[in-house]
Length: 369
Picture (cartoon, rainbow, N blue to C red):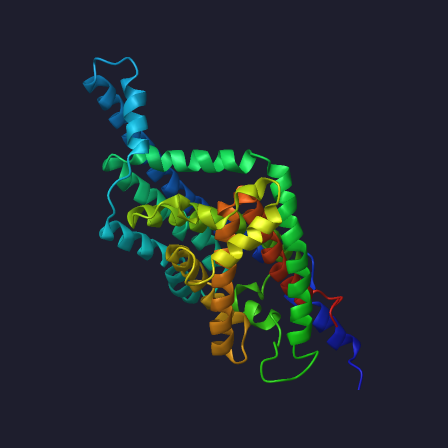
């Protein structure tokens, strides 16, 4: 029998089926803002202390060398040029920092039973506060200048030939976006019922914090996830951990340069393919795969939430896929013709695919029906 007017009204009034912003959406947005802002203040204070320590050490070096007018610059240059010796303890600390996002998801995500809390605390806490604390310690040890110089170089790299790099990232991202959409449509249970089919993303996400929120709030969360998550992840995994862990283990950043042909400026796609083949397990620098494994590790938690059927198989498969994807991001980041900008743009397209699929799952028009 067809549902009566009351049943239809009840269906339309569900939080997931409405667009109207409510006080619950405002309260949740305020709580998440306070959480993120508080963590960002802690990170800012740590960064300021690291910068002040570095500046004070630079002035002390300048005062100690009275024979040179540019003693401060020379001291800074010497510090930047000289590589500190490898340190197993520093490497262990960085590995623990790399497991921070996973610990954040398990402790705060499960503790609050909220994907939103896990996401915000990870972005502004686990991926921001520990690196700033690490740099404060390094500054106290006299290596602050090299750390700050790393991010200055990263900013310069992003600005250099940014449009061309962004277009190359888009050329990789658009087919990836479409592939994710087609893959989801072919894997969902509404298309074909089989042991590995995907039930939906709506119910698990609503169980973890989205049930009370209107569609407009979800769109806002999707936009935040799509554009900010790649920023913080690329800086954390492909800049901070990529460089610092290699430095702690005594691995030269240029070791992988031999995998990319000299003609990458004139044939970027061919040299990228050559680099990808050279980066396969057993041929590339093992550290790159290690950082990529850390990157994939924290994704296991959201995978176990959204994939409710045969969870362990999706967790293992998702981990291997994301480790490979993270390794490809590293390859893009190290390639002169792609760089951090192309890695960011591709990352945006990947996150956008997941956000769009989740939003269509709960949209009243049900575009995928």
